[in-house]
Length: 180
Image (cartoon, rainbow, N blue to C red; front, side, top):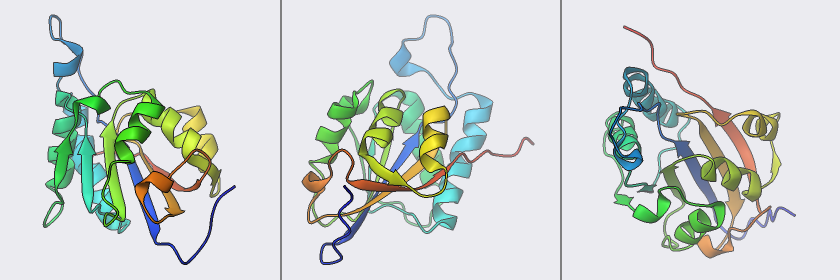
């Protein structure tokens, strides 16, 4: 059941799947770069977050090249990007592993951006969402493509309060950059 207790602060977990990446021969998965489309879509994701007034207080980013580059390009769209922590545990993480990292976030952070990979991110969003606005849950169940952004809101005193089924999935967007 979703806790809507107004006495505790409203928190947002913004989940961003890295932008479209390439599969070059003889390049380790962790080192895969973004494709030209990925390099267009990542800034579009940054603009979408700014337009939705969903800029984070802190970003947690996988150490994979494609995730780090997505962060760099998205954050370049903001006047003053928030601090970022690159965490190897976010690479190829399970939903439980992702949630364990989120639980370490300081209580003063109200909006957290998590940049990583599927299937872990998609499964995390579905696990945390006790409910969703409009067709957001169905959108994520159908596909959580590269550059997808899911916003989960919940009331909690600390990030350790975030648990499966405790959040409301308020939006899902898939920003795309224009071809030049």
